[in-house]
Image (cartoon, rainbow, N blue to C red):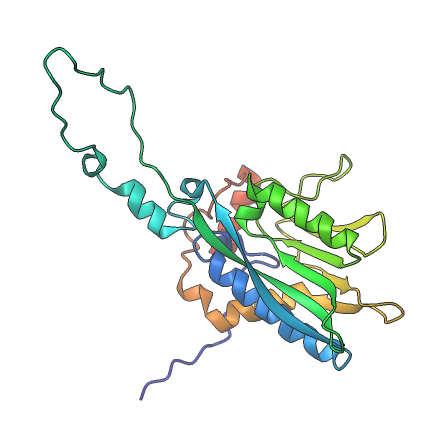
Length: 266
């Protein structure tokens, strides 16, 4: 029996791979949550445990991700509109309605599962820290407001909140006038503190090692995001699914960054 030997293929990018932001993202998202849990567990046992929970967000505008995130929606939008026309209706003479100026298909909201890594006290199952990897639905209305409400609710409840944004598109939930525009962003809001620590990450930079807080007086543990992403890439053999000779998924890169991407892609 032939068994494929993965030769430890690596992404050509030193940090986040922008080619993972397209149709591969749902798989990357779930695998990264599992890898983060795997990395944290030996650091927090036996007092704490890491669990993966999932919540559902309704995406009311899935057409904006058609062909990128939601293939079923792409199929619907690609159908002939003749199939979407209303059945023939016979009107009485002299009672014919004016034809519509424009018609479009009705898109049903798509339920998007979003994984979150939760660190809980092993004794009483109390939520200590939430590690959220952002999905596109978290970065546009109405999901953005729902996400912001959840973040405020957890902070009020005394839960640490680590936000990992590895998507260039959408509206970033963490905003500040002094925060320069950056490709990616990691943000940590500690429980009962009125500040957020941020790690801006350039397209060409490696992902940082960030602290994950626990209950006082226990010290933080460290999460190596680059190592987690590297292991996800290798385990899933994403190099077999990516054509690095084409442009990355949207949003479009600037000319200088695109030149750098072409050099890496070979």
